[in-house]
Length: 503
Image (cartoon, rainbow, N blue to C red; front, top):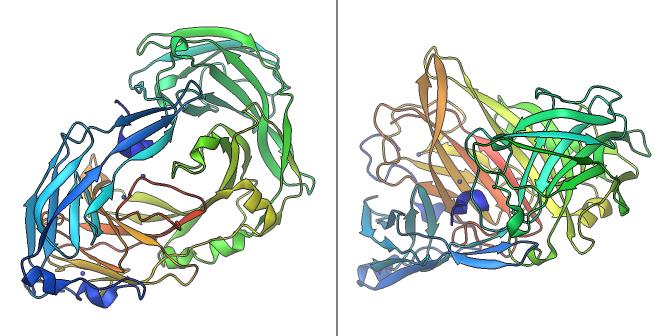
């Protein structure tokens, strides 16, 4: 298997204090029980186990394979709530996708899988996922694809081209800046050339495996209420096999799918914008958009990845944050009629981080909602979950820049004001510099059902500078602390960005 499980799918006391913060039992959601510390004292031990089955849903047929965990670092950590000390229990991963850690005391554990931690009282973990597309290899080196084709509707500024192949789940887009990109009024492509390795999901296309290469014209249109949007319009399908590093050339004719559809939304952009300062007091709004697409019906009940190309409708008409009632938006649909239509709404926000005098790095996060498309048309589109409140590094406000937090720091937060979180994910990033610019590297991700996490040994290093992204998740029926790669509808996510902190 060559596709990464993560890509198939998703990520604080004073120095010398020891436990460096509030006990995690103080930060537990009211619906979550506290740790059974008495069992640890009695010496009760258990075995931690997990499985990693990946199901690939392809038009040529489904396939199930284990994700090879034999190269994954597996360690279960327990934390003494009195002393704050972590104890490590080494485990193993196997090629059949299983993981095992023997003789682990009962109570809450931090299960380390590579750079990811699952914080839970469970002893059984489902590390598998369900993905759209057959198991394939990614194209990573320069692989030029050149297209000559007729049948375009007169090209308009704002149109763009979608690239996709349904069987391998490959997708991407081609916009301005490539050789041969069509000019206004063009009805054909003449030597359009793009690098396939630059696609968003560049799975190698092989016609002998049933793959069909598709190129679609996403056309700028106006809704019944005068709102600009882009929609699937015409499609070119061809048989194509790509060899990495070698040029490929094909020609054909764009045709209009016979199936059509409509989509309309009452988009409460102001509700997303109202949460901006909760992301961070210095957060800047960058974009808001809605996508509508379709996916194989087999994914609808499989806890699988939700939305993505090929898009049927893309809506980001302007830079305003005012509410919009679009009225009917029409599209042509080349996808199978049995596929489930899904939609995503997102508002983007950024915050800048700089290390010393280096050029700042712009960190991007979002507040998003995934639902069936019918839910978008039935009710106003607005956040289902908001950012967490009052984030702390140890006992100090996390929006300020902090020093002296210790290498055993903790993070704590209060519940979101909007919605009810089912899980939280904390991503820890380290700042660096390269060629005069600030760089950002994700160090670890911690999944939890609590409102606090303690950072295990080795996450923070003396002399380094960090910040955290705290994500609140709403995904009923799926526990990200025990099944980190499962996705279900409806789901929603909102992020908070802290200030910097250093040990």
